[in-house]
Length: 524
Image 1: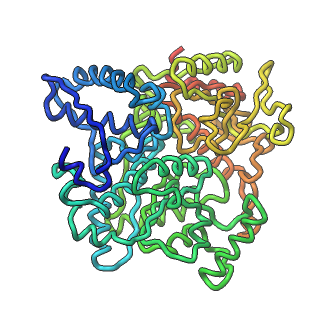
Image 2: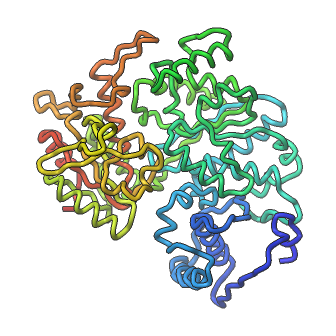
Image 3: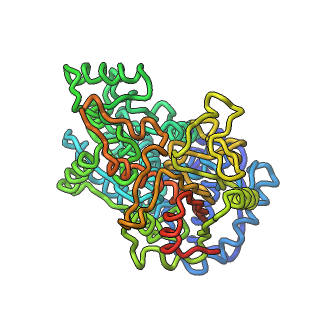
């Protein structure tokens, strides 16, 4: 306690609570500490002053038995006012899910360790660098990015006498030399999607040493008068190439930024070029199979980023599935099915994962409501196969199937956490990057199965995302039905991998329903 109180950031602390348990060993104590830090950060009532210099999901003898007592300790602390919410409520929140105080897997910790090692070498010699973290949905790319932001701030500000555990995973990086290398550096995180960006800003507002001003749009980067030393780019695949933007203002800004950065409005320049022009070190987090619009970076560009990083031994691949309880095989199996390449082993051994097909959309909606009552965070999602009428007429319905009438998401920002969201349907633009406990996915008539050719095909007329099928006049690119199939397939690949505990599926096209059902081990 004397050591803690010697820190200026903790000198005003006035209360101490001590947990006694004569059966606890050091591993159990560290595990409890980790849980309490994450729960407190996720609850949001207090600002957590701890660093995050390295908590890994360690295995130790009789861990589950020790953990049974953690809930009792939590309940006692909650009764004394230290927590406002229950554990399920906390763990369903973005403050918890996007917290920098996460327990890293060994795989994630290895990627962080290697990135830090290379970054400090590059900072020491004054060079530039590009690192890439690649991974399927649910492997924790966003978590690693947020974790790195906090870890770099902790190393920059640490006090060698009081502020970090000498036996922590990343302890070797807490040295005066690295502290000096990071001093006065501008570090930011670029998040292309509006909804996810707002959620991360909220987390940063609650986290010491981080600021919501560090959470940037690509336009923020391109238009800034100052440069960044280090930029992390989450969902790099959602950066834009030159294309018709969502507004005339952004079309003009795109042109102006190109002129300012490159001396002319070079149509070949992308938001990726802005990031490279405005920063010395970049850390890109990407998944090429999550591009969902023609304006997103082309596959060839994403491959180029990855190849460059591999050549410099700065490419890291995350494989462990952190979201879907069915495991990594589920994600790979879903993607194979959507490519029309069902793998005999891709969707087997899903354990207790609740995967169901529904022929009645009304029943699927009732089951999603029931799961939401039981677990929270159960939502309906759909491909963009219906017009968004309710955007202009709040009394109108968007999706009408049989006797079921539904509306699209009423907001683009933080839709998942809105009170009305359980009665609405989320699009790709509101859920990419998020977790749900249960996802009820409506696969619309935009995706069909041709029984003659045995292929998945698109119905262009049934796809209503204007920006999702718009030809690129600036670059003279016309998108074929096969190109559109790639985007729509990727969209459903994202929607079908949101559910942690289960995924419910309703398919409009009968042939596609039978194709998917034949290759998926449903729970019904």
